[in-house]
Image 1 (cartoon, helix red, strand yellow):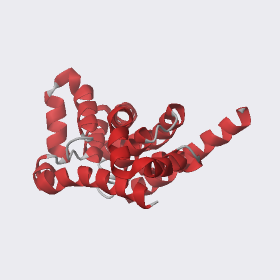
Image 2 (cartoon, one colour; image 1 turned 120 degrees about the vertical axis):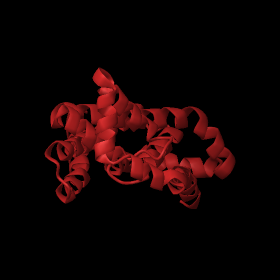
Image 3 (cartoon, helix red, strand yellow; image 1 turned 90 degrees about the horizontal axis):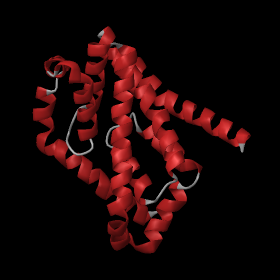
Length: 211
């Protein structure tokens, strides 16, 4: 597991460094009010701009939850939640795809076959789906876990189902926060943390019954 932890640290560092460099500026500029104002300035393309920001969160220190709340304020909790979930899913798919194509060789060079085998055992088993679903509401982990899933060639159908199980609760809840103006999203965080594993668990149960 030491080799796998090394991969995790490298990916986490790649995510955290931009926040350390530009995080304070982004936090100042990406208030909910400023984000809503910018989205509305794009007119009928506000939904695309919001989804684009959520995808850019993979590379830049974008405050994804603020974007989701802004989409909820602009479109309402349901439509805004759909756009938020779609943006988050698109970011996860992009991370998975890029890591699948170009990350595997780098990991082999860093950790060798043994390190890669450790990751494959983790993400090809039951634990992989839980990690993907549960990670979506946590900082740093969504990008890192999606990349690890791609590097280890986690089965795409399982990855996509777990990704949706995590992204849809997150999207709807933070869109609801934006629409209702809830300034203390403690309940939202609890729901975001609790719903993804419940949804993924229900999906796995149904899948097993069909199998």
